[in-house]
Amino acid sequence: RKEVEQDPGPFNVPEGATVAFNCTYSNSASQSFFWYRQDCRKEPKLLMSVYSSGNEDGRFTAQLNRASQYISLLIRDSKLSDSATYLCVVNGYNKLIFGAGTRLAVHP
Amino acid sequence: ETGVTQTPRHLVMGMTNKKSLKCEQHLGHNAMYWYKQSAKKPLELMFVYNFKEQTENNSVPSRFSPECPNSSHLFLHLHTLQPEDSALYLCASSQDPGGDQPQHFGDGTRLSIL
Image 1 (cartoon, rainbow over the protein chains, first blue to last red):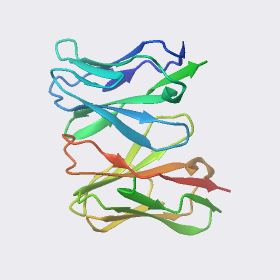
Image 2 (image 1 turned 30 degrees about the vertical axis):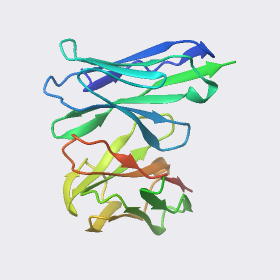
Image 3 (image 1 turned 120 degrees about the horizontal axis):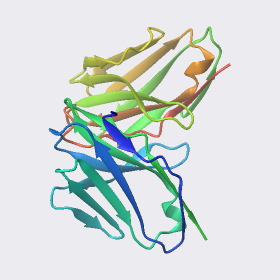
């Protein structure tokens, strides 16, 4: 089992749609979780940290389910500019482990 | 954002050339990283430095030689590279290497080997 698993997608959604990504992790001792966004041929950029109680930043909501060992990212009212690859990042074995990413394509 | 800067942005070199990639972070972080990302592939961790000491070498071929003179600067010396080494090379930094804090990335160097 991979340490961090994501559905590669692509998720093709119309503008204004709500879309959700899940990410599962294997190390039950993991304590820190993040979502990054990576545009094509660019560097990954931190989108948000994921807290135990869940957190929201504008149209983005991140949640953590420790019992099932997954984190989720919900994007409401999708914009064309949200098209990117979303990387799930989990700490484990004393380092950050990056998922392979989920690609989102928002179309008009 | 200029927290982590990498130079050059693009590099084309022959297989017998020697070149170096440079990374500088202005965030006061203690840990620095080199990653490789080939086209449409996930990030591959190459090296980790903590307080300028190498703490991880992820089975990287010796034709890649990192150097970390201080906590703010990181180099990747390249020598006798192969075509399959063409990729985006990303430098990142974080407060510590333990994974409790997020990493911040530079813009990357896009490397092409002829």
